Structures are given as C-alpha cells and as structure tokens.
Length: 191
Image 1 (spheres, rainbow, N blue to C red):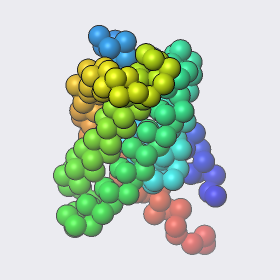
Image 2 (image 1 turned 30 degrees about the vertical axis):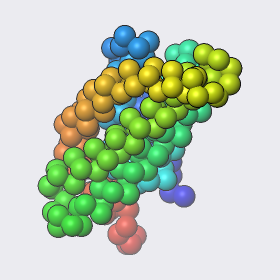
Image 3 (image 1 turned 60 degrees about the vertical axis):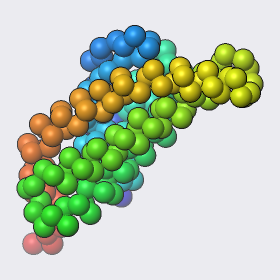
C-alpha cells in the first residue's frame, strides 16, 4: 500500500468532512445541502473505488457524528462510500468509451449515476428510519408514512447532488493533470 495513496485518502476524507460539516445550507426537512459531495465524487475519481470509497464514507460519516446526526452515520458511511465507488468504477469506463481523458462528459455521466444512487440510498434509508421512529415497528401504515416523509427530502438531495457535481466539475480539471503526473512519476523505475 503506497504511502502517497494513504496520504491522499486521509486528505480526501478531511476535505469531505470539511465540505460537509462546515459549509452547509439548512433545508426545511431538517437536513442540509453542502459541497461535500464534490469531494465524495473526486475521492472516487482520483483515488479509485476502494480508497475513494473509504475516504468519502469516512469523511461524510464524521460529519454526521460531529453534527448530531448519529442515527444517519452508519448509513452515510455506506451510501457515500458506494457513491464514490460508483464514480470510481464508471468514469474510467466512460473515459475509455470516449477515448479522450480531457472530455468532461464521462465525468458528468459517472457523477450523475453516482449521485442518483446517493439520492436513492437516502430515500430508502429514510423510509425505514421514519417508519421505525414514528411507530416503533414496520407496519404498512408506518412504511407509507415513511415513504411520504422521505419523499420530501428527495428534491433537496437532488439539489445537493447537482451542487456536488458542478463543484466537482470545476475542481476536477485542475486536480486531474496533477494526479496523472504524480501517477506517471510514481510508475517510472528508479534510476
């Protein structure tokens, strides 16, 4: 396990935490929209699915733990890790199809797929969370109420997703060449 990869993983976990915890706009559903998803996506794109997934999940989970959203923390770790994993797996595939690493279309498509998973992941999680909190058990009525309550958060998660994609697209062209140079210099044999 290369030291550079570990350092970059820790850096992106910290960036994800800061982007999620310190920069937030409250929503009417008692949640918040934040730019942390940009770092979730960049973690997957730049570090790959495994390291990027860990950085994104861990940084996002820390924000929930320190922000008082304790019941969300385990789900956030899983959802954000998988979001980064999707970005880390799909974007290189779309890049090969496009045959141009400078084209932003693969990043847009892969990021949109990843963020669609994030929106769906929180929607499903909140159905069960709201159903269990409302009645203490999963009944048809509590699940119906959970669906209605969870659906209210979907538009805000979509705004957060779009916000994250736009910020990632602004940062990506600056960071990607540096990562490519670093990777090519690391793969050259020592003289």
